Amino acid sequence: MESTVSVRTGLKTGRFDPTLMVWVTAAVVLAILIVAPMFYLVYESVAVRQGLGLFETKASFGLGNYVKAYTDPLYRGPILWTVIIAVSVGFFSMLVGSLMAWAVARTDVPYPGLIRTASLVSFVTPPFLGATAWVLLAGPREGWLNIWYRWLTGAGEEDYLFNIFSMPGVIFAMVLYVIPLVFIVVLSGLNNISSDLEDASNIAGAGTLQTMFGITLPLVMPALFAGLILAVLEAMILFGTPAMLAIPARQHVMTTQIRAFMQSEDYLVGLASAFALPMLLAAIVLLWLRRRALGRRSYATIGGKGGQRRPQKLGPYRWVLFAGCVAPLVCALGLPYFALGVNSLMRTQGGGIGWENLTLGNYRFIYENDAVAQSIWNTIVLAIMAATAGTVMAALISYIYQRRLVRGYQVMGFLTTVPLAIPGIVLAVGLFAAYTKQPFVLYGTLWILFLAYLTRYLPVAFQTTNASLMSIHPELEESARILGANRLRVFGEITVPLFKAGLIAAWVLIFMPSIRELSASVLLWTTRTKVISVVIVDFYEEGLLQNVSALGVLLIAITLVFVVGAYRVVGRDFMRT
Image (cartoon, rainbow, N blue to C red):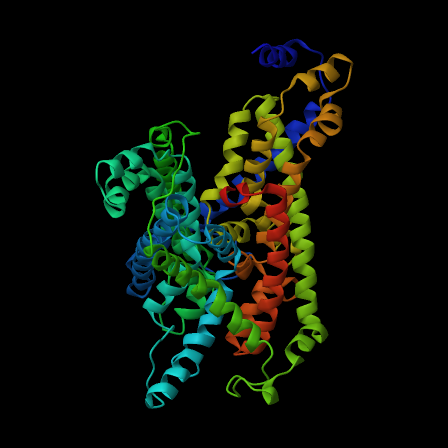
């Protein structure tokens, strides 16, 4: 209490600190970073333009874009399919993910660490690469599973067992990479609950399933609801999987329809904005509901946070449960990684898996192709820039927020977390609208992609640095201030060394998703600013699946290296982050 009072008093009565300009500058940059794209997103959605062209400025204002976007029969299908897919993915992900979390946290299922680690790896695997792998596995004609099915059953050439190019196929491919999100949220909730009531239920004669449905699930209901909300949100904003699987099935969802608007020869940014804003509002509502659900803390304190958690004994059924937990992980990791790895070494798609059809030519193509090399360079440079700038900004804002250095520090904390509610493709539309106009024409440069990555992943860095800074008492800083050091020097020489582990973790947690970001990149790239994820989509649309597989293997390898690094820095809390 005394140190808090001294901080506030020092701020009000001390001499003017010239480093105050650093804090004010950070606040201004943050405001511009978030407000500018959102302002222009709203502006374009109500700007009805009569002419065409990228730099058209004359426009009338009204709801014409909204009327056309939501009354034209051509655009109703994407809205309907988005709702159907999001709800379906949310339901199945919650069902499977919560069962896996219960198995790991509450039973004696074998190898819980393996399930936990594999779930984390599948969570950071790019969903669009998973979709590509399932095209190789479950394409109706050339999919390996269907080829083996025809070989085993003698079925005709037109017969197939699986068709990934269908809405059930899209939902299946999405569920595989959304399940870990539910698993992480529900596992965290279960770990906060003592097993005392479950033990009492067992003593009273209830079986394992009765205890699970009657005791455990009601206690963890807020986490289940939060997991469901996040799963629905993730399915709603995904671009890569629908682009690769739904469009060949002649169906659009809202994210792919927004891309179609932006790729049109006409200037349809207004229609894209009108399509994007309701997605943004839906995301805000879903995240608010999630926060409300997790805000109910009573469920997490029964028996005390440090209470014993004794596993339910399942006997021989533990192996059945283990198989049920491993099955979705095999579909998300084992089969896709195998398919991508093998296909990356094949000369031709239909040549079969044999020595005569194996080659390293696909990797040689990546090495020798100038456009691919440029995309790899762009990706690494952007990821480093975004991670470095994001970590610095997050550290400064966390310091301002924790030490209350400027008026309105609460607003800064709020603005920093706002991008959590902005889908990547919605942010891209806002950035395009904001930075294709004078005086800041950034479209066509790496800077607009840098702003997209920085804005999108800044909340993750802020949460990490803020949590680390909370554990540092301000007494050492106040001692240095008494000796005459200004705030910036105290921050650099005392505070930063004390939470450098959090800074390293924040850097990794921005760098890692930046190297595989797709939903914003796919709208903002130009010929000179392609990144790996965009090249993968281009190769896929051209039918170059061997090259897609080789690039995918490279991208997965880079991702896993940084996952291991993040896990070593942050530990198990990496999953929670």
